Length: 246
Image 1 (cartoon, helix red, strand yellow):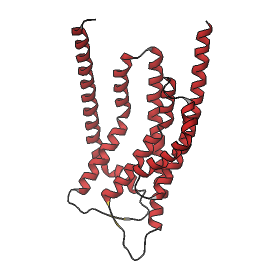
Image 2 (cartoon, helix red, strand yellow):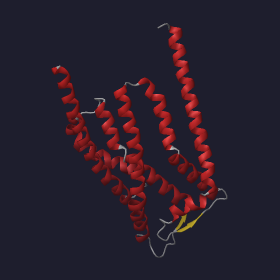
Image 3 (tube, one colour):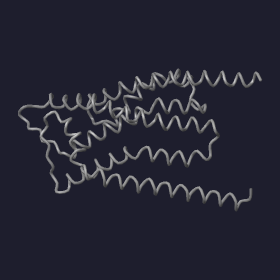
Image 4 (cartoon, one colour):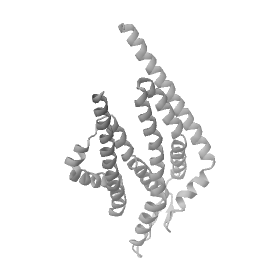
């Protein structure tokens, strides 16, 4: 293949990527505009988690910016199947048939696990964490929490748990293509547990309750990821032995 042909193919790929990214951005913006029309309902779902904090806003545009952020977050979640499809449509052209299957499974289960993480955080973690904050308050000090801080805390926790629950899917994908091996987990297991709580301390608000509520599920997900890695590695080994035997 000539250099001009390679250059033409590269430019075509870039043009396709630009078109798909533009489409994703436009769809997300339209979805954000639609979500904004129902912002009262969306905000109420987060306010239902409020265990009795007195919420205020201290700037003229603060409440409006909260509406925009919540609308955008909801739009990204609602449009995630379309976003994942666009990623799949772009990446799949350069994959073999078996790699396409693995990628499609990973994207589908990745979305499912992200939603599971968000649901777990909304119904279990956030109520416990917010109630804990209320219980440790001092009666002589009035708690007047900014609505922006409250919403940012909730959104940050929801996003963190959604991402963390992707760990088993990432383990499956990396194990399937041979990058991740059980030996890595056997050698680094203790270090990974320490790293989990360091990461939990970094990505969560600076309180021990939030860190523990994220760190403990991460440890469980690590164990699941190790089991997935061992299972996939055994399958890969059997497949390689079968091919050699032919």
